[in-house]
Length: 285
Image (cartoon, rainbow, N blue to C red; front, side):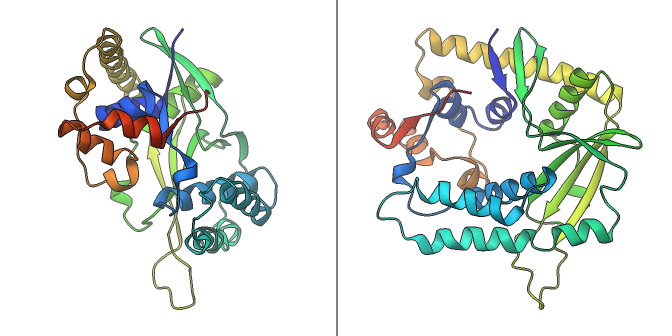
């Protein structure tokens, strides 16, 4: 049975052009070409620290291990100073996290069920795979926890999005009970100096319920059906320039790593050459 990752469906819904290069062709920018960090690098470092924290390991050691691994993959001519700032920022963002959790009585009476564990469940003839940041057993039931870096003071932004609902379905299938809901743990992108005026951390709950998850399951079936139809057309030899249109958004700068190729495709330039010389195959999952 074909496996389709949660992130692939989300990408397909956002932009089929970006999905084509990243998931259909399974290409990624060659790390040897990376010379300057992107916004997601800080987020990845923070995730590494939080994963260590909830596994009972040392956050600073985890950040350092993440740093060593990433630095080893950079272009030999890359300036290390901007990259050093990534881990300095990540360390500052997490510095007061344990104290914030303790002061607010969070995580009390809870137990971790899974951290970054791959869960699979069938939908529309494929196997959906996803990795929730953390699944938690609370007094009120199972809660899906998602870690995000960015703004913390806009609770109206934190509804149960497509990704969180997929995580809810995954938890339901794995544990046989409908999750109580989900929560966003937000960590602000801030050095958190003594002059900082904004909150560094926040938590926002979102409820699920069986009706909402059942409706989402139907939406997921439709999305998978659309994705498989586009895959079939590409397999039959259709031109991706026409089959996979772009969806240019304000998030393209950090959400898409093929913007150069996207423009070349629409302008009739030799995008295949750039793809073959500046991109590598993704590791198989």
